[in-house]
Image (cartoon, rainbow, N blue to C red; front, side, top):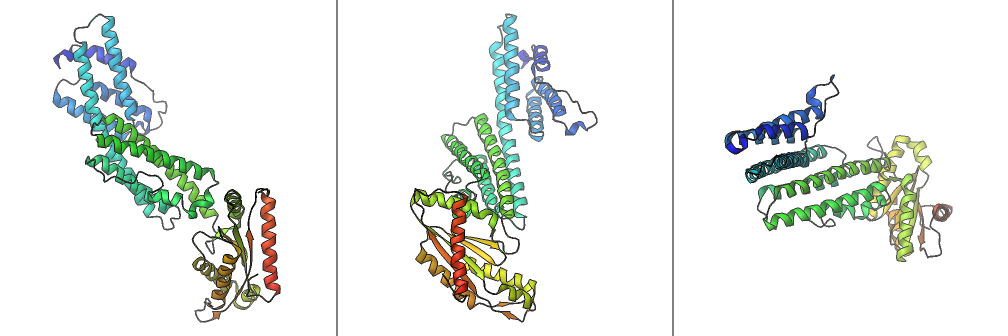
Length: 428
């Protein structure tokens, strides 16, 4: 410590001239809001630490410096590079003066600073990271209509578990799922309920972020289990995981907006605007796999008469009732669209015409036997549905484009018209 005191002037010179320096150019704002002002204060705290003359001062000044950098989001990489720059410049200056006497002691002195700063920074950073995840989780849990945000909740819970694994230092096998396809968030990503987003750039970006995040998490766990910890490495890995997690939240928010805009506000079914995108995707899959799928088109019988007799509010009740019947009668892998007015289109993946006909007949039977109570709480409205179905088997000679989709829609519409012509409340 006494040897270092001899070089305080040289150390201060290096800090003043070789640390990154930025000026505050927004005098009308409070300096507390400015990152440039924080860098200036950081430099003073950094110099104060390097000038400390006792162990007690060093311990306190290290806490002050690290707390300040964490509070003002000054990265560890910045802090570490500043430390390295100063020691390198100081040693170069001493070599230039041919002062070799205490180079080893000076190098050791700065190495001790690096160790103290890194250990404390990791501790403080993990606490802040965990707090951020828990805050995001709390905000997400308070959203009344979560949609895709429920899956982001699962991701955030996974994040908290990973942070706790590092913090608790047990380093056993009780770590969160590292396979990106097996965590709860990953299962949703690969599920049929998310497949209509496959063609969106946001989904593809989300998938990339999620895979990279799990790759880094696996490195964190493996690194911890070796029990040869270098805190700087953990800081770098966890910092990058923090970045990926935040970006995942941004992409989920975008997808959530897409999903909300694609849902019919009355029935909460998919709208026609997503139909073409999903059918194109299924056509490509069918072409590659050789597996057929089916389209089912439903139209409520004499719906205008229901509106005329009971009012449009009662008509809305019927539409919502039929939508719920469809969701109960069909499979989770099926796509249900409100196609317009009282028309509904259903896409049935990997389903042949016979199986589609069975599902359609069940819908007809359930609808005819399930009346709905009107808004007055007393009147029971009975209604029926007509359904047309086609099965689609795509061979390699078929060009998949919008014209192909329009052709299939016309074909299933003709089948529906035939069901109407033959007396309604039937399947064709």
